[in-house]
Each structure stands twice: as structure tokens, then as C-alpha cells.
Image 1 (cartoon, rainbow, N blue to C red):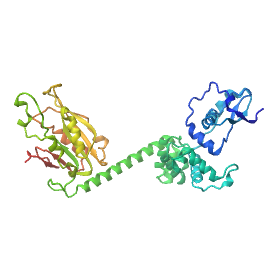
Image 2: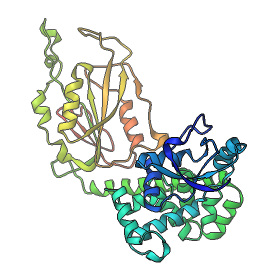
Image 3: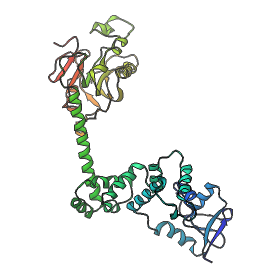
Image 4: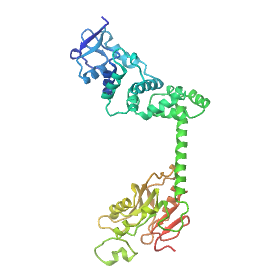
Length: 405
């Protein structure tokens, strides 16, 4: 009885199935709508489904009443599903690339209608456009070929087109493997062959080394660009620009009680409006990092200053003063060093990334830990730096402030 009939979908019984994850049914339905059903489902004489649940669901999604079905003996109800979903061989990555390229050709009108018996290529393209409305050709081709996105498809295509298909086909079909293969494909053929012969793990390790080198080179290029932007700087004026800015604004506090709590008695302070009005954005290179001191009570104002000066908040460090201070809610023992960036300043290299906790006993009023200079210098050893509201001169830094000599 093993033959194909058009069967009413409503009569088919699905029952319990081994496969639970149906995947992207909409993509399958779109494909069926354009190309038709290439492989019928399987049912037994009692209309119980053996294989093809995804295709059956796709037909239901399309709102169709009948589906081509192959009627097979009862004994295949378990074996059929297992064979259909486990024994079958998936396409290799290079085969999927060819499928994707064929879809691109189809959508770009490069496929002749004589390749299809029931629909011309123009009709197929029209149906595809309707089914995938809003998608670009590259996105449709990527989806139909089973790639997660067009970037992965393009990487796989570049590897295949350079004659390095064995790189991808030697690995799994995961995006990370395809990306790894694309990097290895930049090596001379003899090196590629040697790496492939050593297996997937070696391909990934070699690709990781190339990626790390690429990251290092990009970082060096960005650092050099920043150095050039700051080249020629002299003593502070609004024409100078710096890629690293360190600032400790003299925040003004409003305390009730005796005058000895007034910070203005300790050192001259500035109003928030005056701090906001400083032309720090003119001192910063297009790509720049700002280290800005604030306290817990002034956190909101600190973030406002950071934004007004043209920076986007990224993170902060905490200075543990190791001695408890004053406070109305909590007695303060810490201050915050906010970090903001503008443009595409690179983060420090991994070995130069410090702890977010700075432990140092406080000294005279408002003086910040000496080690913070060293931290910033270690984070960005090659870049010009300026300290705003500086109290002292430090070698390798430009400075602005009313206390430094």
C-alpha cells in the first residue's frame, strides 16, 4: 500500500512523538508555499502520522486542507520517525552555501523558468517576495540555506569561494565554527591543510589566535589615532584635546548645622551649574575616556555632569577610605570614580584592567589616592592625559587647577 495520496489534514492523527522541538515552522511554510512539498509525509493505513510532523504543521500554518502523504505499514511508526530525524544526513556547510547562492540567483532573476515544471522563476520570485516581505535578498538566502544570519552566510560563502570548503566541512555547522574557518582561510593553503589535518579543536585554537592578533592590531591602530589627535598639545587651552581626562570637581554641599560642616571652609567649591558649564567636551578628543570623582550623595549630579560633558556612563570603581566619616543616612567610608566614554575609545588590555575596589586610607580633605594615577597610567600608558582640578603637578600629565604649582 506504500503509495502517495492527497489526504485531508483533519483526518491525520499525530499522537505522541519523539521530536519535541519543531524549529522555525514559518520558514518551512514559506519554502513550501514557493517550491511546493518536495517530500511527502508518512502515515499508516489508520491515518496515524509516522514522519513529517513539521511539514504537517507548516501546511496547517498555510491554511491548506490536504497534504501529500505516503501510506506505509504499521511497523514503521517508530522506525520511520527515527530514520527521518536521526539517520538522515544533514547538508554540509558548503552544500548549504550552494543552496543559499541558488536562492540569491533566483531572487535576482538569474534562474531560467525551464528549471521548474509548475512555476516560472518570475512566479517563484514574486511568491518569495510576498512570503518574505521586508527582508533583503541576503537575509532570505541565509534563512533558506539554514544560516542564523547573513553575516555567517557571507563568511561561509567566502571560505567556499576561496577553495577552503574542507575547513568548514571538517567542523560542525555552528556559527562559531564558520567564523573560525573564515579566519583560517586567510592563511596560506599549506598552513590550512596542516591545521585541518589536526582536527576541529586545532582549527578553533588557530582561529582564536588570529582573532586575538586582529583585536590587538585594531587596538593599536585606535591608540595611534588617539595619539595623533592629541599631537602638538601645549599647556591647557581650549584648542588642546586629550583622550584621557581625570576630574575631581569641587562639589558644593548644603549641610544644616554648624559652619564647621561646610566644605567651603575646607576648599573653594563650585556650583553644579558652573561645573556643568565647563567646556570639557572641547578638551576631549572624539574618542575619549573620562574618570570622574563623585560621592554617594552627589551620584545623580555626577552622572548629570558626565552626560553634559558629552560622555556615556560605563561603570565605576569604589574607593574604600578605610576610615568612617560623616553622613546623615550612612556614615560615608567610600567615594565613587565614574567612568564614561565618548566615541570608540578602546578599553584597557585585559592585563591592565584593575580591580573595581580601591583601598587606601584618606589623607587631607578631598585628596584622592595617589595610586589612582598609577591605575590610569597603567590602563592607558601610551595616551596623553589631563587632570582637571589638579592639586599637584605629575610627570606625564597636563593639569588644570587652582592649587598646583
